[in-house]
Length: 420
Image 1 (cartoon, rainbow, N blue to C red):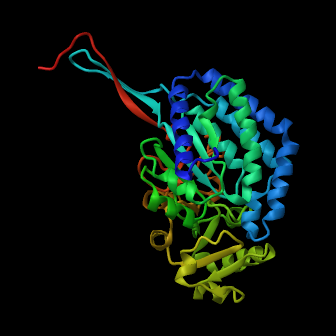
Image 2 (image 1 turned 120 degrees about the vertical axis):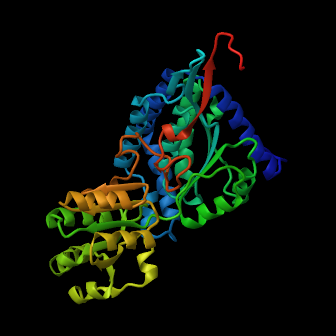
Image 3 (image 1 turned 120 degrees about the horizontal axis):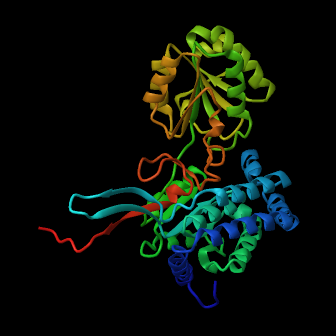
């Protein structure tokens, strides 16, 4: 930001530059965008020491973060390789810009095409995870959008190191240098100033805690793509293979407990509760997971704390799980409808009818059968990466990748037709 500029003026200048970049980016051939992605992936690995050093500074300063948020903040060589692989996967995906979604010829000879186009300028706000800097930039540029990145203060040095690498590669590949910008101030008021600019910014995407998302929704003058909570359920049906169920429950809860697609609530059919509750309780205890259960759960697992309604609705983002024994699949669905967040829910069963009932009645962005909730992720579902997971129904739902960062327009070809 320039000297003698007010915060409002500086934020508007960032948005104006992003708008100009989006105009130039909208018609860039995919070859240049893919070259940028591949060169950026290589540069992230070549310059990994600088990124890891910056991340170490952030980690050393993050003394007040929870264990889950420290895990989100932490970069390792393996995570850097995953970040680079995400860019390579995005490069390998088809370019959504200019794709004809539908086409028809009218009786009067008009040729009608529904064509994908970029959204324009995206304001992306995120907390803790510096790898998201690369994911968001990759998806936005590949889909023809300019992006304004605003990471959390806890990851400032990591985000800046990654952003500088991406920016240098933009210039080398002949792409608009302002197609990716990082807000250079940690002043919280900058967020509010940018959220006022509906004339320049087309979409805001917050990715982080509920308080951040609610603030963005309250202040934004442009549409917001978001989810508030990730209270994800696994329901173990009476027809479940219990070995499979144990693997899925432990992976869903324990692999990365601080992420939004981790299981927070476990439902167990009453017919198998006497066998499965003690078994899964012991396995969770071995992994230091605190269980908060209903009265029936506690009759089989005395070490469990008594769950409240708030526990059943909670996104713990920690090694804590609520557990409830339900009488049947219908009761499991009713519980999810009451306490769920519409994010990710799974059933473990060998009964096709139970699976069909569950997938038809659970109205979440992702519903899984015999698989971990952790698979509701853009990378895992073949999107290359994701800019976030939406629990809204308009205009995008679930993991949001390239296609979800485009809109469409109708392009109509005629030969002199006029309307009667």
